[in-house]
Length: 95
Image 1 (cartoon, one colour):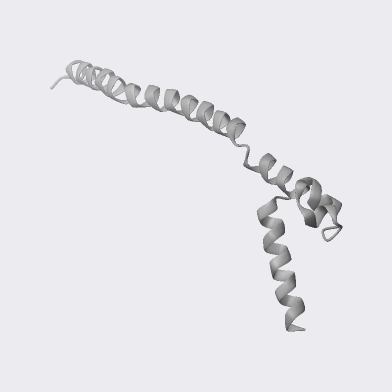
Image 2: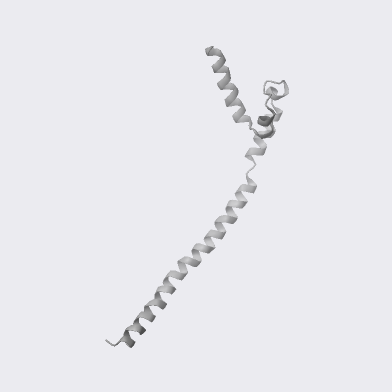
């Protein structure tokens, strides 16, 4: 075959290849943006940390001074505080 014919075949192959690859690339970019938007939305709608912290601040252990660490009171959650208190009580009982 002549080089001119082969170059036309290669050009047709390149066009077909770009068309086949372009669709998944465009879909990937669009889905990436959708994924980022959904991740941002779920981060904004996740109130677990705020609710857990408010419950910790309402607890009797914080009010009567059993939990004194101010950093933990500002950033911690009720479930974490309970686990730590339970662990410390078991530790004291072993002594």
